Length: 106
Length: 251
Image (cartoon, rainbow over all chains, first blue to last red; front, side):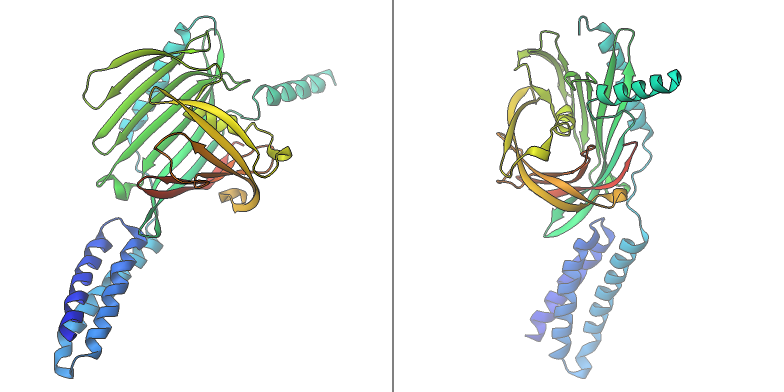
């Protein structure tokens, strides 16, 4: 049982790290929560000598949690200034004006 | 005094001539998508109005833009632009333009609503395929997808009863789609910089595969003369999402 918890905690910690660095926002909290849960279960089933690896796994899961929470608090959702899109918008307006000028008897 | 009266008349005629939809209005929304039960903010959607003058006429330019937040751009970049040029008094569509870039998919469309009121001349281009041109007939009251949002805001929901409906027809992807709008009462909704507002809850259903579920596609319009869309919830085959109003200016 300890091995199963350890494997699951490792898998979800890996997922947590990946999710924490992807722009998935609070969605990363799902693997982090599961990783911490299995980590603690594995910790409970372990002897004092067997706890080092689990502590490292838990440390990475908690660090992922800090990264996700930090990103949510300090990083604002912003749209990049896109000159290509701005040019497209002004060209679209010019074309529309030309089309509207050409329309008769509206 | 005469100048004052002239100004009053001018202001009144101005406000009536624009069917409640004023130029230079800007509504900004945060678009979220439901990922495994958690709403994740993906993009910013803005709706803008402005006047467009040609040598013959004046049009109201309605535009809806969607752009993914910068953190998503390297994974799935969206730059969508939907535009409608309408008669400022009736909101009848004259010209509709659509330009979308969603990841590796791109599409441009242009509909010219002919003066007979029932013919559309369309030009369409998807990815690198050659441009196609088509002329097709529609009903005289058929609107495009942008102008219908603004048309919805001109309905007097004050006298509507719960469950009361109104029908529209829109044209999308060169096909006519019947749309049914159902009034579902009044609810308080958080409306960005406008604070919490009592809103008309409206259900929108359309005979299309793009929308899913009964009363799952909802729009809350502020229950005042401006009828600002404060919250929009949608259900599509690949999930659900919502647009929450962040800021409303020029209203």
